[in-house]
Image 1 (cartoon, rainbow, N blue to C red):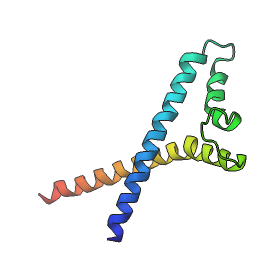
Image 2: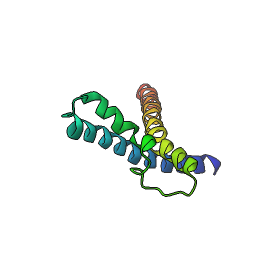
Image 3: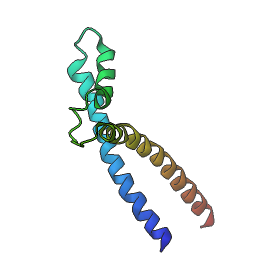
Length: 106
């Protein structure tokens, strides 16, 4: 039962992190398409990626305490996409190891 609950919690967190990863990718693409015409081309993209931290008005969560709002913005915009990438790597590695072993059993 405990193992099943861990899998469910991981699945939910993984799903949310996938959504936030897509938002991160959209942010990068938006920076390249819309702001590359500026004079400092690649620096504009860095400003877009830093915008949740440097300009919290872009992040549409209104929490009374600005420290918590900034903390939540960092988790959603940076930590969750990184979690998605690392988790995907380990899930793929586990999947390949499992199926490689089952190939030799048959």
